[in-house]
Image 1 (cartoon, rainbow, N blue to C red):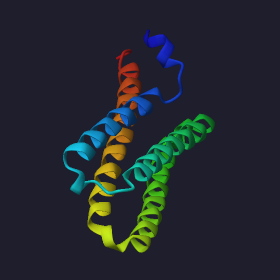
Image 2: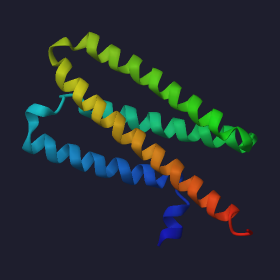
Image 3: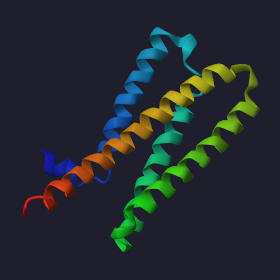
Length: 135
């Protein structure tokens, strides 16, 4: 069963986004005053941004594996700037709901960033264990 899902690119991202969406839905129906009314756009934005970031990291490190850290940190900085631009546009357009947007944006940003860091750490741990086997 896991071999079927392992063939889907970035399956863990889909699974993570599904769980985050379930959490947002639960909050949307239980505590709607704390959820930004366009939270779905923010969720889609972070899903697509994370997908693009993982794709860029994978493609660039395939060409030059030794430059992984430079590529990864460049992708994180690019992700940060794109997120700031996205947030600035929403804040300028919808000033009445700045607080809800900011809190929702920050929580989703940190969740997706944590997912990306966890994925990288899991990948690096696998490579470090493989490298220490011949000592």
